[in-house]
Amino acid sequence: MGQVRCDEAAQAEPLDEEETPMLGPVLRAGDIALFPTDVGDLPLFRAWHADLDVVRYLPNRFAPSSEQEEDWYRRVAASEREVLWSVRLGEQTIGYADMGIYWTSRTATTGTLLGDRSAWGKGYGSEVVRLRAAYAFGWLGLNRLEADSLAGNVAMHRALEKAGYARIGTRHEYVYGDGKWHDSYLFELLRRDWESKQSAKSPGPGGPPCGEETGYSARY
Image (cartoon, rainbow, N blue to C red):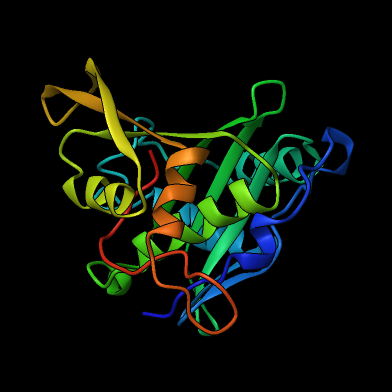
């Protein structure tokens, strides 16, 4: 997989709240890119949320109506604290990623969904996690990222840990599904730990790389 360069991002000044992007900017690493979500991607999102295998690790497993999906998109696009991307492999949209930012604490909750089954198990989810972290810390000046992941979602745990997240707790019996209760694990990544991870890597042309690859991730 390709590596995302973060030398320029690490020197950027934190953005003020009024400067917050509503849809995420284009971020690239190897074959994977994060693009501002277009309304044309919404039918794909609805189809993925109607697939029980895709949403098996989501707390909410109900598919939205077209009107609900469009309302959600308009709300996110107008928000001053939410950032949304479509995940693309070449010209194909294979998922989406987001952040919910709390500016006073410089913290964000993060989520990733790879809805295209053909993209599972190829390391794309881990690449998305690293791209988003580099943008959050380097460009937005955030200090902490947080993610929830159901206990059975081992590939998501690996993707988060590969990017430097640490598991810090468990929400017991957090979601009910398939006839039983499921725990949820809480992960966090602090800016100082992310910076240490970057400085430990050997810098290549253009600056230090922000990561490697592995893992499939599903939105928490």
